[in-house]
Length: 234
Image 1 (cartoon, helix red, strand yellow):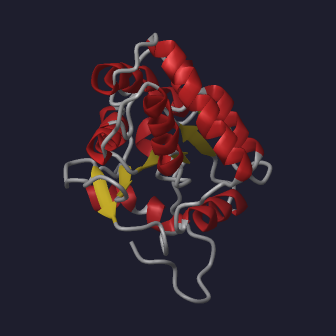
Image 2: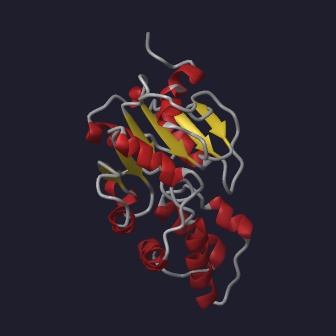
């Protein structure tokens, strides 16, 4: 999926919308989740491994909280664990927003070309809204957060909800994800998916195209994704 060449004109093929995962895809916030989790577990006199941290990537937050209770010895109700983690991550994001490579440039290009974007995240609404508020106005036309849906990723509901809010067909969108859980959610919703490897391995599978980075990925390249996956209409 190479960038457009010099002197290229406005692409003729663009996705109807681009649906972005947040943590680890748009911003490198998994480090903040790791830190907030480690602080919580240390406060309860326990330690936490990187393998446990990796097991939480892409999960619904209540699922992660139950995992933390089971493996981290944190004897608190799952909703309280979620609130503590969200507060810790939101506080860190207020100090610094760490972009993933190429994400800011691609988001800016999509905004310039009037391609609507939605944020589809399992982070809760107050965290997602804080990130959106820190971005240039108009970057996201819709936000679907973890506390907006009944079923989190890998269920298709988050991506189906995002497409419905933007009033576009799922098959005409492109999802950008960094986790197996998120990719499974997008593909189950019928959304062509671009997997961007980050902290956990991604495996080839129908409905997804894998890249090592968003650096050099263009709006036109996203528009070609259904053809690359063999899902283009016509």
